Length: 227
Ligand code: ADE
Image (cartoon, rainbow, N blue to C red; front, side, top):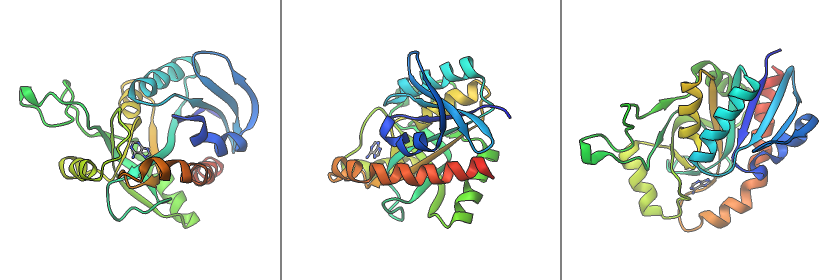
């Protein structure tokens, strides 16, 4: 069976997934990488570090080193869409780097020099995650994720990001990870659990719900790889 790559920015976001893996080893190298099996698949679980640069570099490194056939990014996010509640799941249809700004040259906010703006997740993997979540009765929404090198903890700015990009949730890696995966021909789905509403409560809510979010993510990804 071909290799699956799982990515999470922080070890705590992946703690429950790590417990699920029948672990063979934690590999040395520039990132913490756990190798094992999950369901029917050989798996590498990569802790990338926080932010778009770390995410992008880790995806590229993993693709070149392990040549996985499919990838899932998991982690937590702040809600922009008021319908998203704490512990709901948001699954990216696409994602945008909302801090990219070359509007001085007449480009749209978040548009890259290449002309790309909303980077699509892999459609096949995304619908598999969606179907599996629905069969488990988990609250999940398909939507748009906005990423930047910034922990967003201001409600008025969160509303602005929602207004400009029609995004449902905010985090710090997904759009860069999807962009890199696409460039390298690695199909990737992007799945997040909501910990906060990106307002002043966000830092405390983030810490409060991190562990239960990680368990929900592991439950779903475990089932996706077992079915
Ligand atoms: N991850 C979880 N909550 C977040 C927020 N409010 N901003 C950025 N990344 C997040």
